[in-house]
Image (tube, rainbow, N blue to C red; front, side, top):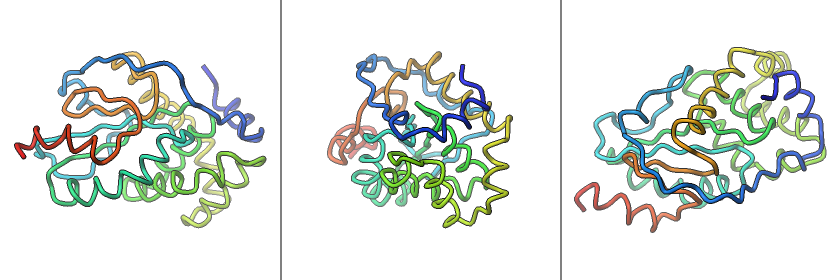
Length: 212
C-alpha cells in the first residue's frame, strides 16, 4: 500500500503517473443494496431524497478520463432530469487509482460536505489542466485557490493522515467487498454497470425502476 508520504512525493512527478486507463472488464456482479448503503468512515455525500426509488452509487477516480467524460456529458442531464426532481438519489464514492486522485479526493473532503460536489465537479471539469501536466501539484494548488483554499489549508489537507486513510478505506472496501476493478463503476439499486454511461443508457436502466 502506498503511504501518505509516498503519495506526496509522487504528486511532484510528471502526470504520466496519473494515466489510469484500466483494461480489465468489470465483473457482472450485483450487490445487495443494504450492503452498498453502509457508508465509509467519512460518510456519504448524497444528492436527492433518501426515499427515492432509485439510488445510484458511482465509484470514480478524479484522474480517470472516462469518469471526467461522464461528469461532463451525462451528469448534468442526470442531475436535471432525475436528481433535482427527486426521483433518484446519487452518491459519488472515492476510488482513486493513483496518488493524484487520492490528493484530489482528500481536498474535496477537507472543506465539509457542502463543498464535496463543487470541488469534484471542478476537478473533473479541469482534469486536463491539472492531472495531465508536468507539474500537477502546482496546477492542483492553483485550482484549489479558486475554491478558496489558502496555501496553508491546501498543505494541511494533504498531510491529514486520518483523511488519507479514510479515502483509501472507501476504495479498499469497493475493491474487496464489491469487486470494483475499473472506473467509473455504477451500482443502480445494487445492479452493477461499468463504464461511461450515456444519459440514454442510464434512462434505459432507471425508467423501469421508476415505473416509467
